[in-house]
Length: 100
Picture 1: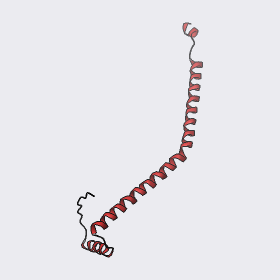
Picture 2: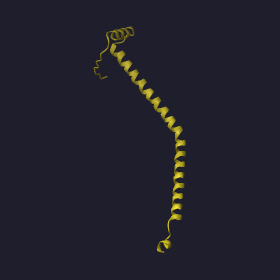
Picture 3: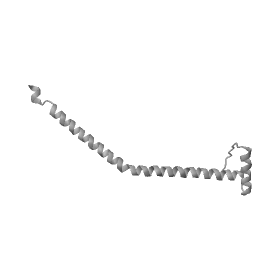
Picture 4: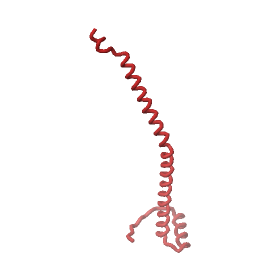
C-alpha cells in the first residue's frame, strides 16, 4: 500500500487522548486516524446517498401532479388561442368590406 504523510495540529489533551486510545486498543495513532477518517468519510457518503434518495422519492411523487399541471396549462393555452382566433375572425373586416 502506497502511503502519504498527513500532518495536523491538535491540542495536547486531544493528542494525549489519541495516544491513550491507540495504546489501549493495540493500534498505532496513524491506524486510529486512518480508521476514523475512513469511517467519517463513509458516514458522510451514506448520509448524502440517503438525502439523494429522499429527494428522488419526492420528485417521483411529484411528477404525476406536475404532468397534470402541465396538461392543464397546455389546454388553457389552446383555449385562449382558439378564443383569440375567434375574436379576431369576428372583428376583422373581410376582403369585401375592405374593398368598399
